[in-house]
Length: 114
Ligand code: HEC
Image (tube, rainbow, N blue to C red; front, side, top):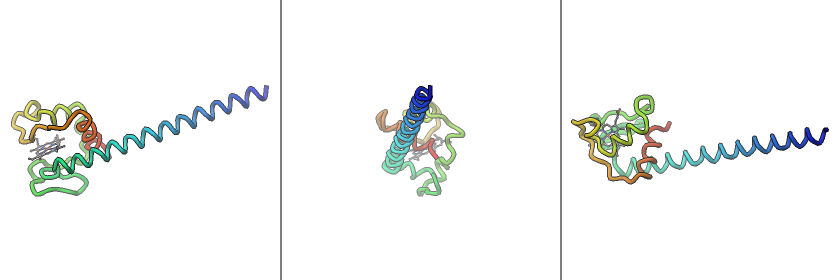
């Protein structure tokens, strides 16, 4: 009887360890994705017209702050907007994105991240 309980306990323990490790890996993957997004944000010079985390470019007043964007927009909106800004905001001054799907996903992960 004891051995069954012991084994059950061991299975539960390994299951929770596995969940923990999987969770940590997922968090690491998210973090890596946001970091690549941050690089793209810098390379694309989004900073030119926007402020984020206190850093702003010479025309930051044009696009305004992107801090706390997650409270206002979701990934689908940002994706559609970056691909073709004028289809979402006809008067938009934002240039159309030339990034591929993977790069857009990384950039959006950064924009919606902490
Ligand atoms: C030439 C200036 C300019 C550049 C460069 C620029 N933006 Fe913008 N952005 C704007 C303006 C202006 C708006 C306000 C809405 C509009 O006119 O489309 C805006 C709005 C946004 C919004 C919507 C914000 C909200 O609160 O709804 C997001 C997201 C955004 N920009 C992301 C980016 C990203 C990411 C980049 C780099 C790839 C970028 N912008 C580069 C000018 C710019």
